[in-house]
Length: 315
Image 1: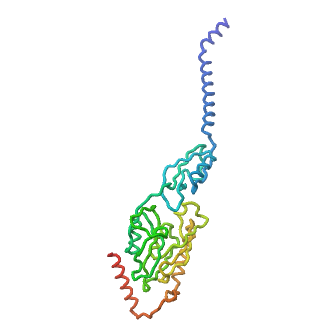
Image 2 (image 1 turned 120 degrees about the vertical axis):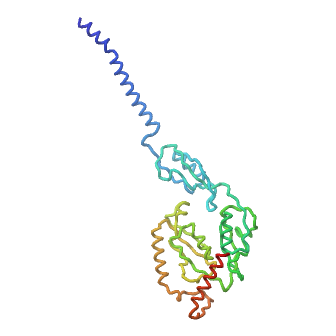
Image 3 (image 1 turned 90 degrees about the vertical axis):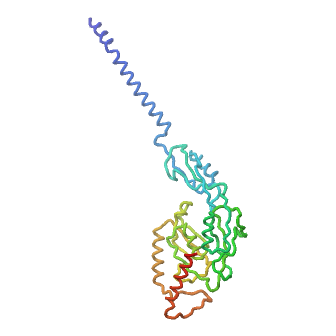
């Protein structure tokens, strides 16, 4: 009788055993899937992205394969100062942590330069010539002054040392050297204070003051082209002047950094030194004649400067 009851109970709760087995099987399956997924996605295993900037495509691909990563070119720009195919930008940035075989998106310098037609700026003033060249996606290069009655009037244009014929196809952003007139009575300019001025503005500031950029030197903080664009001047040679004591065409050497605090500190020191100077004690270039002015000369000169500024605006 007892055996019969035991068999009846076993038959009655047979589904409970199957349920326990099903739950155990599901638990084991979940564990196996978790471990498999962990292995496939390499959970917790990451690689550090190297710095591909300034490398050629070939060099960047070799480093990418060595680092178990993949490169994908997503954009290209044309910068004449850089080599064709040079890596300019990457995403993710260098030092980022990524999974194996991750795609690194890069921007390169165009392999084929964009061509533009050279305008004719002969006969224009320096400011008008700069405006026309900028509109044509070109830049003012070196200013070469020659004796002439019309100061800062363009007498010739050249590219890479050769005369440039208007309408010639040349790479965009090329520098066009200008031959300019220089009168003996109007050949002096001032050297502006460029301390803390951003990289992209220094050339135009010098051109505005009829000066040349001799050299541009970067400190150790500037490592990539992006750093170059973000850098500022922290030192210059010659130092800034208050009056017109530098001959037009004088070359200026600039030193740039990413340390903007240093640049700002130097700027304040230079300004303080300039303000402490007596303009009458400025050292004048050789062969400069100094004339004694009447008492009202300052007012007359100021009126003349205002009239000249108004004429320039009307032009």
